[in-house]
Amino acid sequence: MRDYVAFMKKYYPEGNPADVLNAYGYSAAQTLGQVLKQCGDDLSRENVMRQAANLKDLSLPMLIPGIMINTSPTDFYPIEQVQFSALTVKPGYVRRIAEPLTRVTMGRILARV
Figure 1 (cartoon, rainbow, N blue to C red):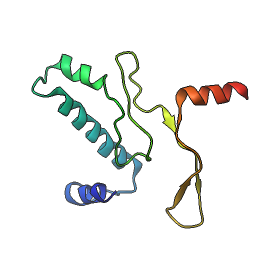
Figure 2: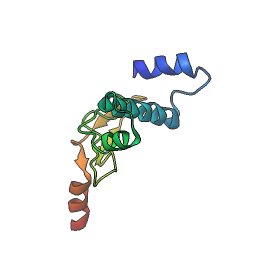
Figure 3: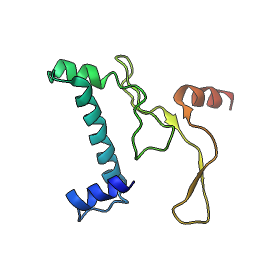
């Protein structure tokens, strides 16, 4: 979180760090950075797309711990996990009440309802 706030102060000082769109943009940029790192010296469109479709267990600082980004050539949806949490009386404090669930696990749970 400190890196994000420092980034906002340096590159977008008039922006609100609490704005979810700013946090989203920061995370999207980090994801693109990982894709480009995986590309190595081959920055062709084909390789960029291939690497974007092959992200494995990418953890980003703005995501809840345990939530990972994964893509494949047949599944482009990067985040398929949820985290149940509970807000407490302390401002800004969120308590996790379960481990992250995948889309498949959520489907199984909802199918029983």
